Image 1 (cartoon, helix red, strand yellow):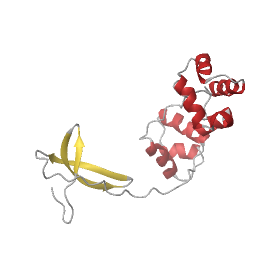
Image 2 (cartoon, rainbow, N blue to C red; image 1 turned 45 degrees about the horizontal axis):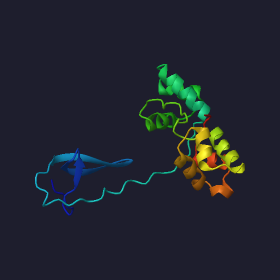
Image 3 (tube, helix red, strand yellow; image 1 turned 135 degrees about the vertical axis):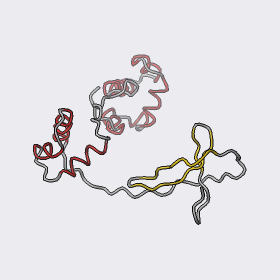
Image 4 (cartoon, rainbow, N blue to C red; image 1 turned 90 degrees about the horizontal axis):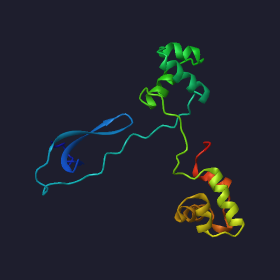
Length: 176
């Protein structure tokens, strides 16, 4: 399929090249499958069309209200009754929260076992203060030596490593 003034666009789908027609929808570009490409000689791969800029809106629904919203939504209440119960004057605020996750409540966030916990970061800090090697610290934590070395290098080196700053920089505000 050709577009006036545009070259053909191709996507890789499961290892096969397919011709795709770009369709712009609100919030991003979606590719519609047009047909399977059999000859690679005429392929020209273009970058995706620019998406619509995301407008930065501050949410008017607090975290406590979100918990209540998902509880009421699971109970089968209507959006209008949820908005009234939460003191929201517009149902659009509620729709925006529901739409962001497709109407499915997000799973509660937990810290992965692969990520260092705050306690482990404290042990690294204490071990370095005591003059222990990375290998000795890693043995005490039952982690790979490279994990300890990368953690220290990523967050200030031997002289500047601080467990609280490293945990904050990791961006994980959850309990272990």
